Image 1 (spheres, rainbow, N blue to C red):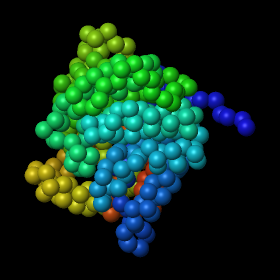
Image 2: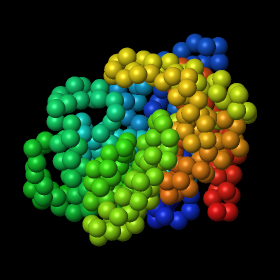
Image 3: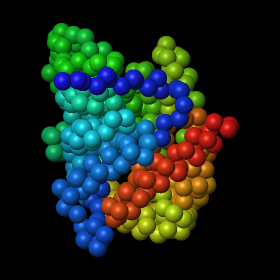
Length: 357
């Protein structure tokens, strides 16, 4: 049997990375009927395979445990995609490490790394959706402590040496080695940050890369975080690490079509979430700002989306952009078209625009 050589790890600061993220939202068929969870997951595999086929750099799946987003085992789906692709990097968006066991997270993504030939990455986060905490018996009162301790343990596991670690959130490890080992060096690890300076500094302290999760408002308000991240890396004696951006969007043939396809689903999801979490739903005025040049929603024709992504990357000093595509209830066919346009039209335009700057 001939086994493929492992992929070369990206150095993180060379060139521009253009990727996709999804939360595995339940989608619809062309006739408007709702896909089952199983159909949605199989459709997600097809979306990941297409992302590789159109030349995108990364495909990430965010962990959720709900009826509308049934992606509770993202690494299993990513392995299915890995078996049918050969180039695209695959990972989480995010893995809620606070309510998971860091040893199992490491083992699952090290296994994905083996299956994919060195293409695994992981984005760790606390998760804005907290359904995993009661599901696995964790107290939301321990939200910060769980994340801090488990991030600390994961950093030790990445060294792939005997681990000596103790904390309050799980049993200690007294010189144990965790398997499997990776072939291509440490799994690239990012931390998803939603707007906390303390989280930026913590990410730098561990030497992880920074993923800015921007779901609303003006993207420019995140610009200070890139500078803070660079300063903190230097303070902690860490090498330079990349900054990435995760933001929602949708691509269609025209701006009007993209808004028509995406916005009703986006509004419906945020109305439901606002009721569940007790915040104000978006207004027409706030949505108009978010769709505008400086806003968080990257919606429109390939040219419109490419210009906006380029502006976002330049304004934030970032080298990676992951479009969070899809919303609950959108047709699977519209998502496939969006992925195709994003890979064949948007990504080349962004790379050209960035190279000209």
